[in-house]
Length: 77
Image (cartoon, rainbow, N blue to C red; front, side):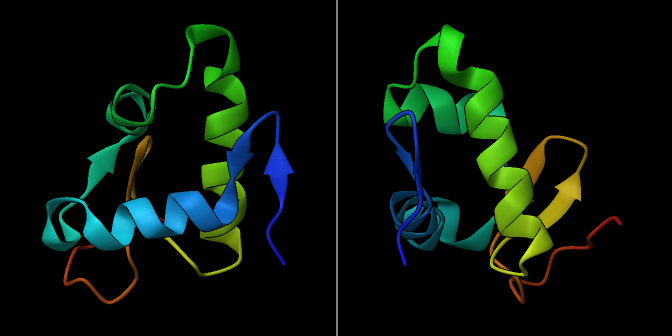
């Protein structure tokens, strides 16, 4: 199921992380910039990234950095 919040799709984010930086952590602001997400929708992006991390589809590396799980980066809880 592809959940979309104000134009931010979980599937699109997973695809982005699969192709971005070869598994290196990416900050939420960089994701927004790369995907053309406007400042007013940034908080929604952070919510979707947090949901993906809670579901185990992304790993939260630092407060606002994320990577694919199993990419060899140390995660935080």
